[in-house]
Length: 77
Image (tube, rainbow, N blue to C red; front, top):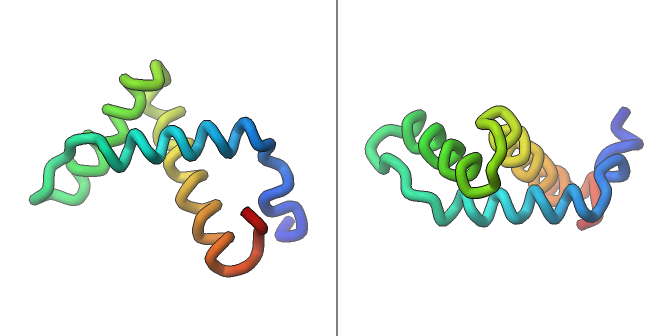
């Protein structure tokens, strides 16, 4: 379904992804261990946004995929 890329998510959903990613970037992590760093940052996002860990992880992952698709020119921002 490449033709549906970026169209299915509404502006509110994309705003939520962006907010989650901003929190993720500011979150404290473990600078010496990549996996623990990502895990602790996602936990922090979940706590801040009052979500489950799985929901927070999905929002971060969706934001990162959205940015990759913008970079590839597949989606307009």
